[in-house]
Amino acid sequence: MSSLPCEYGDLVRELHARAAARRQPVNGTFELTARCNLACRMCYISQSGGDATVRAEELTAAAWLTLARAAVDEGMLFLLLTGGEVLLRPDFFEIYTPLTRMGLLLTLFSNGTLVSEALAQRLAEAPPSRTEITLYGATTATYEAITGVAGSYARCCAGIEALVRRRVPLGLKTTVTRQNVGELDAMRQMARNWGVPFSGGWLLSQRRDGACSEVEHCRLSPSACVALEATDQISARGWTETARHAVAPAHDRNFHCQAGAASFVINPRGEMNVCMDLPLPAARPLEVGFRAAWEQTQRYVDTAPPLADACRNCGARVYCPRCPAWSLLETHTLNEPVPYLCEVAWARKEQHGQPT
Amino acid sequence: MKRSEKFMLQNVGGVALLTPLGAQVMEMNGLVILNDTACCVWELLAEERTLDELTAIVVERFAVEPVRARADVQTFLDEIAPLGMVDG
Image 1 (tube, rainbow over the protein chains, first blue to last red):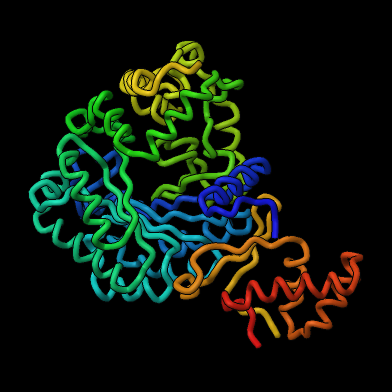
Image 2: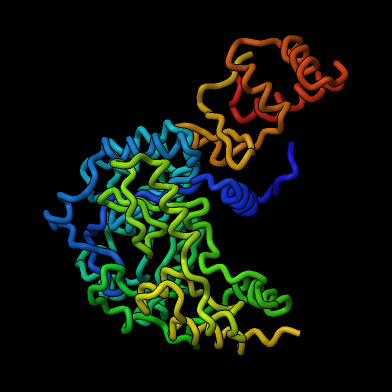
């Protein structure tokens, strides 16, 4: 019926590109809470689940729905609900259920530990397009050494099984750290046994509030990151292609993703930002209106400083995952090189070869 | 026939598409892209319509031959019917 791509992932990317060309805010993230019932050592966001002060600042369910309706009016189609742990909110379904009637493609991120049989049943009655649960290990010892909560591994597995039994669209993912990298294959096998897709990420950033985390003790070394990528066929093929075709990008744009072009994030206090890792410009859609907040977010991206010279002239630039959010978290600027990512980029270049 | 109320028409970057609502995600988890003719037919199906009625309106709006219009409408209906997108 059209010349658009048939494969779903390619189609979604094409829709995002077309939305970005029109500055349509097609992709939203609602961070319903920063609180979490786990205490992962490397987490970049989590606040204590029982923190009454943090909880008091969170938007009400009614406010989230007001924002959702306004965003839909401006063209939002994809909406991610994330936290913290979204299921900590006792009013979660007051937010979620009306969203399922708005024509959105919903994604839900959770750690799975609060998914009871009853909650899984309720989700199955109007499921998100995708639910993603993070698995932190394949054994109780490893999982709970990361999450810091006794009993959380069994609860996570029970939650996953409850969702699988009810055919709620589900994917598992992991945050790979030095502590659980040895169980990566076992986690992949768990996902296979449950019949769900599995993915992993291993580039761990600092906390966005500047507070101390144990990320330095959890991050894989740059060479370990690249070695891990080389064992993943899709990733390795992608980098080989990059190496084959690599030429310096023609532009010096600092924001090269859809942030502020087609996507936005609203944090638990109701502030609109360019992404979860970059809590700016902190526009206030409930006060100034959604459209004005979205325009402010676009302006923030459009007026960002260009790449630093060191990055523009870098021989490993095409392999580099740096973005303004990483620069802000690690260097307190929007464009300076991030030493850890520089090492990752050069290790990738060494692994995948010099382009010809 | 009439369109199902379990789907919603959306527009992303000038592309018309249908998304499932509520429990319908269990039956069809994804989206359906519509070309101009399909979008027109979908909007017409807000009311009860026959194939002849749909064809006549498509002929008028898109200046195509009746045979071609009827075939296009039928193809679209054949594609969306198994997805539960039309009633009757």
